[in-house]
Image (cartoon, rainbow, N blue to C red; front, side, top):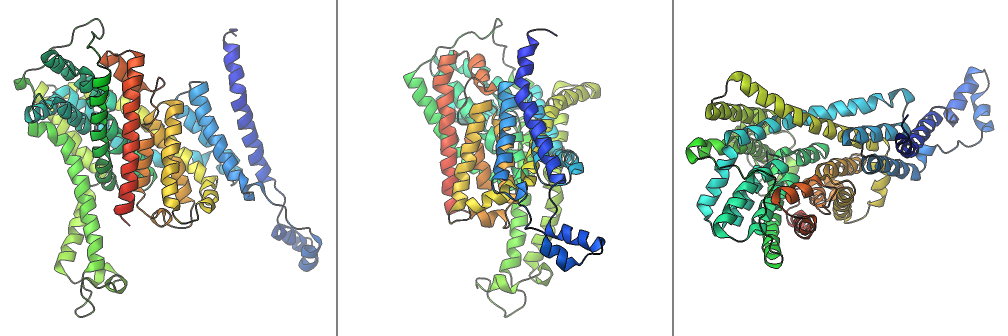
Length: 558
C-alpha cells in the first residue's frame, strides 16, 4: 500500500469508530433488561405466582432510548457524519447521506433486523416522490438550451425593457429560466448576453452579471421544479403548487434587493470585462434561427399553470364545503356556524360547489407534478426536434444525456430523504417538540430552519444539499410531533421551506460551485467574487427570510 494512502486511512478511523459504536448500541437495545411485564410472563411460564413474581423484581431500568438526551445524541452523530464525510474526506454527498442514515438507524430504537431495510425503504420512497419530476425537469432544461428557446426568452425581455433597463431584463431572464433549469446552466447561457451588452454600453459589466446571478440564484432555491425546492416541498408535505406560488412571492422582493445590491457593487467596485478562456465568445444566433416566443415559453409556463390551477381548484373546492349551504335555512354563507354545520362533502347541494369538486378531480390528474412535467417534456422535445431538425435517434441521445445528469440529483435527494426518515425513527421530533411547546414556537422554528441551512451551506457549499438535509431535519421535528404541522407552527409549513431556502443562500464562498461558476465564467478574480457574489447572496437570503416572517404573520394560510 502506498505511504500516501496511510494518512487518508487514518482519517477514516473516527467514522469507523462511530459505526462500531452505533452497532454496539443497537445490539445493546436488542439485549436490554427485560421489563416488568416480561419478567411477570416468565414467572407464569415457570409455574410461579404472577403476583409473587411481580413483587420480587426491582423497578425496571431506564432504557437508553427513553433518556431524553439520546435523540439529540443521534442527531448530533448524524450531522457530524454528514459534514465530516463531505468536508473532511471529500466524500460524495450520496455516500455521506446514506452512511449517516445507516449510522442513525443503527442507533435508533427498533428490532435489529429492520435497521438496514428501513433505510432502503425510505430511500425508495424518496426516489418515488421526486425521481420522475427531477428527471423530466433535466430533459426540459436541455431542450430549452439546445433549441434556442432560452435565448429567445432573454431577447424578448431585452426588447420590452430596452437597453437602459438591461439589468432588469437579465435579472428577469435568470428569474424565469432558473425555475426549470439549473443555475449554472442559466448563468452559462446569459453571460454572453451580458458581455455583448457591455460591448455596446461600455459600462456596468459587474451589474449585468450580478443581475443574472440574483434572478437565477433566488428561484433556484425557492421555486420548484428545481430540485432543492421540490425536495423541500416533498419532504415537508407541501403541495407543489403552493410552493411555486409562495416561493415566487418570497423570491421576487429578494431578487429586486439583489439587483439593488448589484447596482451598489458596480458603483463601488467597477470590474472590467476580461477574456474568458482562450476562445472568443461564440456568435449569437440570428432571430430566424430561434423558435417563436410563445413556443419558447410554453415548456416553462405549462407545468407552472397546470400545477397552480390544480392548487387553486383544490383550495376552492375545499372552501366550498365550508361556505355553501347544506340545506336551505341552516345559515347564511357568512355565518360562523356554517363550518361546524357541514360535515360531509356529499351533503352539498349548491351547483357551484359540485362543479368545483368535479373540476378539482380533473385537475388532480393534469395538475399532478409528474403528469404536468411529462406534458411539458413532450412539448420541449417536439420543439427541439422541429427547430434543429433532429432525427428520433438524435432526440433520444439528448434525453439520455439529460437523464445522466439528473440521475445524480435523484440519488442525492433520495438519500437525503432516507436520512430524514432515520432522524424521525431516532425520535428527534418528539424530543424537540417539548422544547418548542410554548407560544410562538413556530417562528422560533423558522429561525432554526434558516440558521441550520446557513450553517450547512457555509460548511459544505451546496445550496441543494443544505436544503435537502435541512428540510429532512425539520421534517423529523414536525412528523415526530403529536399535533399537525400547521397547528404546531401556527402557519403553513411552506414558510418553513422558504426559510430553509433563504438560509441555503447565505455564506457562499470558495467551497461552493456557484462561486466558481460566477467567478470564472464572469472573468472575475477570487477577491472580486468574494466582494460581489458573497454579499449579494447574503442579501438574497436575508430578504427572503424577512419576507417569510412577514407573510407568515399576515398570510399564515391556516
